[in-house]
Length: 111
Length: 115
Image (cartoon, rainbow over the protein chains, first blue to last red):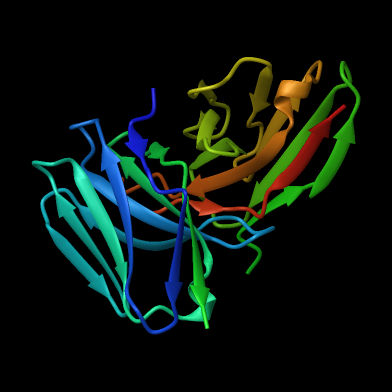
């Protein structure tokens, strides 16, 4: 049973605009969340994380928002750039050093 | 900086054949993981290890075995390959010490096809 769900398999956005990726989770024991970015034929690379005690974390063009009551988080990319075209995975974790991943969202940034 | 290295990158097997996928990390990490990635399924944990000489089952362990004889290496074995094991396999590592929210570091994957 998937504990992390990314319900949008794909997202297309124009260069310079905002990309918003959504993620829902069911496991209330998660105490941190991470976003990974993956290019074809490469492994996932860490992008940004957020602790469950925070509601926002920002790193340059990337901001993650967490709504614990709704069990929902989102990743905002502003402004979107062609190099942001990739698959983005949301993951939740707790103190056992294991992660549960969503199915991923493929982002395409149009010129 | 090599990080996490997976060998081989591609492999085609026939049903019933066996093979071993090798993962090596040079970061002195305690924890290592094997995942498989299938379309629409994300990454699912097969087995993991919390240190040299230890292994544990993940979410989808059936049909796979693992060994961690050396801290830097984590091997994933398929004893009798089945078409359902066609997938992209990723290895990852984590320091395993200190805060648990440190990100995992991934290799570039092994694309395995079972005919």
